[in-house]
Amino acid sequence: MNVQYHVIIVGSGIAGLSAAATLAGHGLDILIIDESGHRGGQLLRKTRLKPSCFSKFEPDLMKSKGFDLVWTINKDPDIDWLFNARVLGIFKDRRLLVHIENIKTHGEKASEKIIEVRAENLILATGAREKYLPFKGWTLPGVMSLGAAQILMKSYGVLPAHNTLIAGTSPLMMVLASEILGNKGKVTALVDENSMIKKLTFLPLIKNHWSKLLEGAFYTSRMFLNRVSVFQGYRVIQASGNKGFQSAIMAKTTPRGDVIPGTEVRFFSGALLVGYGFAPNIELPVQAGCKLEYQENKGGWVVKVDETLESSCRSVYAAGEITGIAGAKKSFIQGKLAAMSILKKVGKINARNPKKIFTAEIQRLLFLNHQQTAYSSFLNRLCQAPASAYAAIPDETIICRCEQITMGTIKKNIQQGFDTISSLKKATRCGMGRCQGRICGPVIFDIITALTQKKPEHIGCSLSRAPVKNVNIKAFLNS
Image (cartoon, rainbow, N blue to C red; front, side):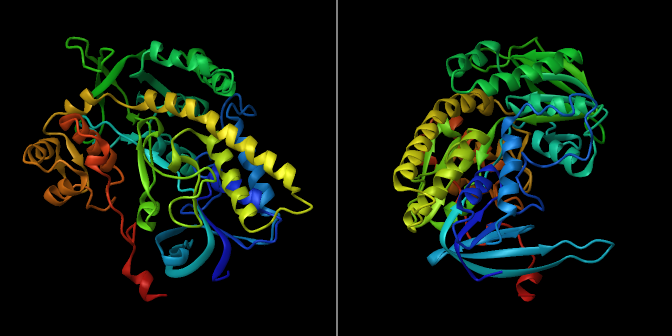
């Protein structure tokens, strides 16, 4: 490994892979850093389980494109990889503090250390995480996020349960149900809070996003063939069980998102999987000093970038979900666009990249990137739970799982004037636990918004300081 690179890419999801593949072959020293032990993020995580049917058909076209990108990158000797590595901080002149963990097998202890690398140009492609709408019993064993269930199946070959109940607003619900069915599991029911009318707002977008329609048709047909009950316009309001999850109560909601009394239905199942869309992973850009902007149609707080995807910090670019939640296609486009912006900046327009063709390609990417804006708006409207749902969370419900802070405590402190993210954090310790607000942060923001009607810029977002993730002090001693 080098100490200094022409380009460092943080995150090896579709955006990071697209950027690396575009930069490959231009004589640049490139480093890709990723927290996981594999290339491609959650989308390209290979399953250990084997589907029982449709085994050779992949409805998501971006998956095959992603594997092609990996193949292209692997051929370039100038690209280094760092797996199981976490960037703890970004400092002046794009110096990165990186925690590396070497995973050992056969009972050996894992070794870890801290290194420092520097980038002439930095691409942040840190992706997104899931959002939640807390309810009674959401901390029970057996209640988990959709993404956690995917990791359980793909990385460890374990189904969440023999019978699984899926609920929320996320488009990932259908994907996960299909994966469970393909691996001989059973789906008790799929409870979608969105109504069909809300989903039909996708129709004007079909021309530019027809592949999404085909994906939806594939997953819907699998639900039909496996006789999975699909409930639309219902929300999970309570999970119950003695030592773990056993049943959930769902209730029908109005178009405004209010629960309709008397419509409660109880479902019995072995596990409950929930998801309410995604929130950008902005901790590193915040710590690096990049300016943010709140865009509800992009998923909340996102990194503010110019046309070239350069942030307010010089030579620091942002690509993918951290500039707006829109899925793999947008990430692919932005990864390539950020890389081409760097190639233009460092003077790599040559015989291989004639200026006229290079400029035309950048213009094409800018057009495609703009085209993703409409889909981003649709996706984030579909996933966002209504403000009334956050305001109606019962007082005894735990919001901050790390610090065991309840909705009642949060309400009380907001009424006392602690109605910003930073002030509420100081008053209650919300977001100061092990996860550093990654789970409760977006929830608390939505709660404050629902209870106070304040504008996002007056509520603010959580500050991030190095190290942005927990690290064992032993790692510093080994360095």
